[in-house]
Image (tube, rainbow, N blue to C red):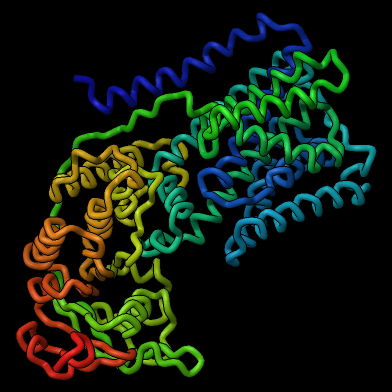
Length: 578
């Protein structure tokens, strides 16, 4: 039987066959086709960088032309004004593009999304083009800026063939780095932000940092592509980085397939090469370009990358237990007021290790507001929340999660585009070591950490009898299965405190029984302190050690299930009779 490791190795060998075959391409081309081949490599990087933000991160940001122009002009200025050889300008162009990515991410960090983000980033690109045009002393203005083509470190860069081999090497390095990045914990976090930013923060993942990382890496890639473009054309002009460039780049991403590395290559190659076949017919090039885009998107909405089968990598795994904790959670006088409305008012309780405390009450009682205030999604008006004696009331959601308090969500918080296994691995993000550069360069410690994370995630699924669905996209699961996977993902990092928001909603009686057994196992065997919101009274009475009853934002009663069952105030407020 072929192992997942063997499958992965085979895929990598096939992947590297493409550039090896491409080494022979200059032997089969003339100067014109060589020029087109070089352009394919440039636009592969432009498309790849664009796809990281718009496909993987899911942000409708159109700043790629800004990154492209910044990189091109940074390289040209460094060559002409500073006298640096072109090869030495490559890191300068990349860093300049990364800085552009950092600036472009500011809009996303302020919560600007969808069409508003598209307009803001589009304006950023147009602002840079205005700068290129009017800063003539630095950029050459409308006359453009020449790029010297001499001999760099013995390489005759005026030769299209030499350019091809240099461009191929750069492209392979950046594509390999991007593949490493997207297959790592950082890549899973990027996709998690796209799928559900709120749930991502609940796993201890700093979403703002992930957004900035994706934008900066995109800017770095496209900035280097800009340096290649500057050498390729020999002169950079402001109009090379306008709306036409943006439309072409966006079409390449869509035709190739959003969020796909292979799709970036296919889209760039298709839309760079195919229109050249009709260049001899004036006016037909644009028409042919449009036809290609329409046909591909109509026949293959997910792009050319959808033609390739997806083989999940599922290594076998190893088990680790959760560590019991003591003195877990103490809530004192917690209140949340909205313009005079007391959604939560002076609520206090404690949660001990291995204890299940249920929170019940009618709709509008303040139960979810209580969860949000504890986990950082709502700012308390007054009160204190101590997690293992440390105040967390003013911490961000990801900081609270990183300290050891994790939660699920009433409407579900899985990442549908990730597999079941990848969802659980995302829950282990903060426990998976490896810096950005460790991941990017594929260093051994990052690779080993990734394997260990897969092993632990697989074993946790096995513990919950879900390992047979490890390679299934989370969006294909039933409601009950999604609930179980969400809990597995939430407890994967071994948190001492777990907040479960209506885990049994929509479940069948059999699934509810299974959910109750999971809750008891986590509290009894693993020592996890569980705070539970649930409307299924039979599950609450069977699983909870103590019950907190709320109505209109306040606590009206607290006690054991037996005490609550006979409490007149509870019967009147919650069960509807005394």
